[in-house]
Length: 268
Image (cartoon, rainbow, N blue to C red; front, side, top):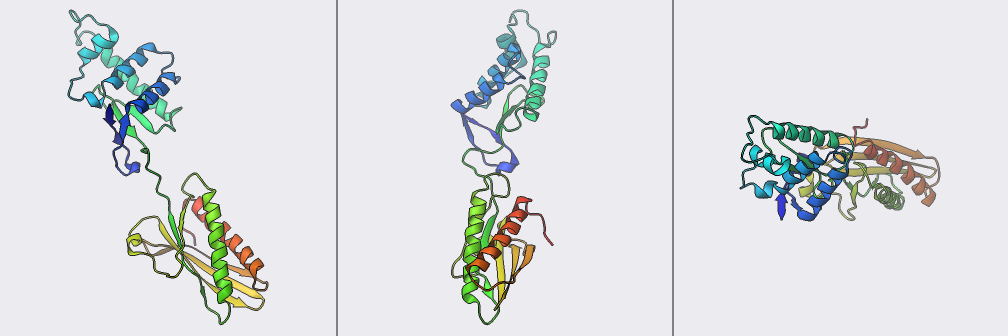
């Protein structure tokens, strides 16, 4: 059995089938929760509605049918106008589901609900299986040396920073601070198909080298909007060498990862 579920807009509107095994896990989790563990009547009603979900949409799910199947009403005398048990209990179930997902079930990605005006369950997947959250993409461009000497130092700084950023983002596994990195080698041009993509950033910079002083100026560009989102200048009063590259890269990495960890808020 395959059930089509409604999907929240945060999941890009893609439908994801809900198979029988997953449906049983969702139901078992609900029945074991504090909201349902002590209510056999609620559990029986929930199981019946799950078993008569969207895959049975061609079969009418009526108040009368639920009253007979779940609440053991006598078909010969049962009148829904005189006995509101189904309406009352479905209303209670609707509220219990909403309360469950607002409290102990906040982290559950597949949620059941009963839309107003009907008795058939709806299924919502907040993040479908196989669909990863969309993380920012960072394109690290080769830095430019704007003094007579220092090309080798500039290339080394770019390499050192790229390594540190990769290690930092790879170790961050949760939230919007995780970033996918792309490091072009021979071109400073960002591919055209990336320019319209939201969440794409280009890190570019220039380096000035003097015998006992180095300054690196960097900018983070929002590619789609063409706006500077973050910038910084980093100075070191020490001879050019690997130690200076490591020191600069550490400071730049710490500042840039802090920007993404804050959710990409604008920096002055």
